[in-house]
Length: 343
Image 1 (spheres, rainbow, N blue to C red):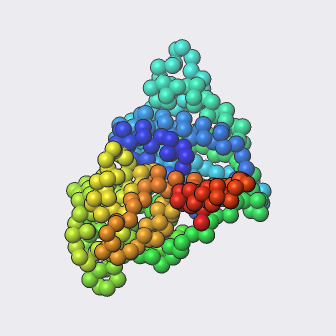
Image 2: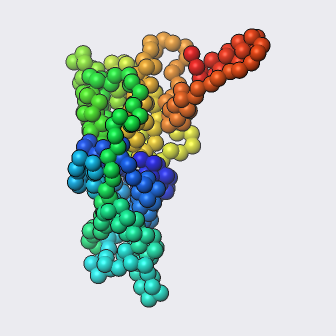
């Protein structure tokens, strides 16, 4: 997720969709070298962005082998770029020489970068390769082995506001994002649908509201054919039957002023892609915590990535005030409480 977030801006500038999908059976706590893994991912994903003119880059992680103590993961980085000729592929992971540098640079960024990836993968007891066809995109893949982490030493997740049984409808025109959202909703035991067309989303929301079972939440993609997320939100909020449905916007662009525009359109949450599971969960929990009558004079704050990070930072602070003057102690505690750092 961190690697995708680092490269999200580069993908957004080319209007490319960037998504990551981790299989549910991949352990969340492993022992290994995160620096090596990050370097491999950034190099391969960065190359995919560089050589893809339109479409998407998807990163999929699954379990290849598992024993009592170790897990070997398999990573696919697929792009919709120009593809790589068959005669070029064997050279991609070799440090380029002066004679073949132009070919290697054309299809693999720098030959040195891919060669380093191969070395790092080998050090992690894995293999690396590529599948491609001209004009049909490429899939760079690698495997890496990690030791399992003792669950007793794994930091425990905070107790979340329950998302179980909440009714949710999402719309996104990219298949990988739809699959990702479906996986998250199933994991959180939420009930709902993930749709491709914004018009279908509006119809489903209206039908369920008429049936007396309105959706609690709707997640809307910003960039969609026929109707963008802002226009869909305007139509939803204009329908009196849908006024209790909270809206969250997902966008790959993150342009200045979009957050303000999103709040004006009726959104309670605004997150930039690629979708991070923990961030989306926190956003859903926070938005549901803001459910209040629409007659309140002050609207709930727009939940953004920055808001969530700042809230997490404040909640994680532990402050010890030491002062021999009781008045100063009380003043310090009052100041800290006003910053929402402690109760």
